Image (cartoon, rainbow, N blue to C red; front, side):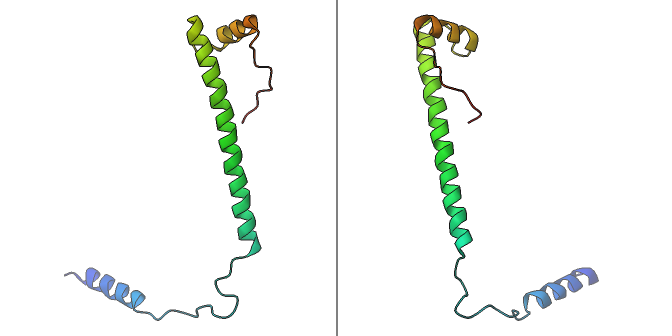
Length: 99
């Protein structure tokens, strides 16, 4: 073994063999703060909102795809599908947003 590997092994064993420092103890150790609960609730609401938004967009796409395929239109040609749906009186008038 080279001198470098021996020195590295000694340094690693010295670092791993050290006794742990001051560990927290007492009545407040391990208790979660109210901010953690707030973050979990906010993340849950965000996940539910994203799921609801995805479902709405996916349902809209499926309706448009079924309409387009029934009339022989390319489902990805938005302009043609919009015009055909407007002529059929089935145009979705809801506001489109980023979500």
